Length: 105
Image (cartoon, rainbow, N blue to C red; front, side):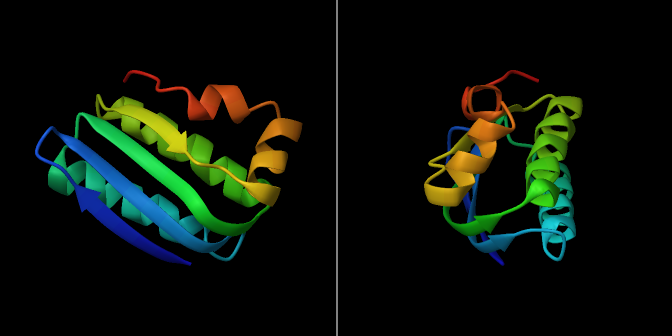
């Protein structure tokens, strides 16, 4: 998985994910989220999953951990653009709404 960080001048950071979000890559997301929150201290953290072509339960847990970590750092959080299998996996887990709706920290 490749993660690209985009910062804007309004205090938002968007992490753009590309590839599989699974047991093998979930830790990479955990590390990037923690590093981003400490280094840039965004007011809002967006995880854009448009490029995620596979997401299993480990990936979903990583997204939930990302939200929890953002909140502990006082940042709002949302997952943007889940499509295909990622969207379906979030729907089945009952997390599509909770993760894609901007939540405050």
